[in-house]
Image (cartoon, rainbow, N blue to C red; front, side):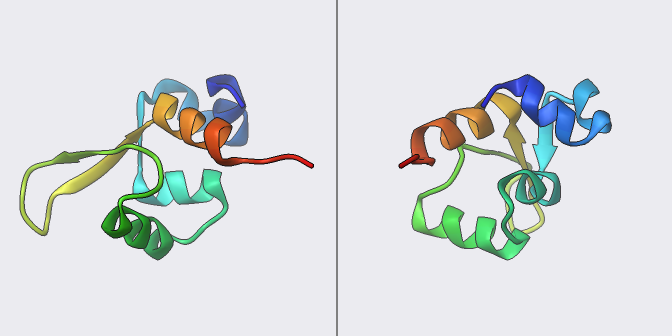
Length: 76
């Protein structure tokens, strides 16, 4: 997978460098709560937390999503 593949999923992603939790969940085909669980378990794509505390915003770079997918998806 490449960044252009992410941009093809939703044209509005093309202008973004980072995606929020909902957008990232859409790309990965999981729920937002799964991403929360993955963060708690220390797995999943790398993320940045903007503002500390419970209300902090979680953002994922497109490159971290691509790296996660390329390193975890196994083909038979």
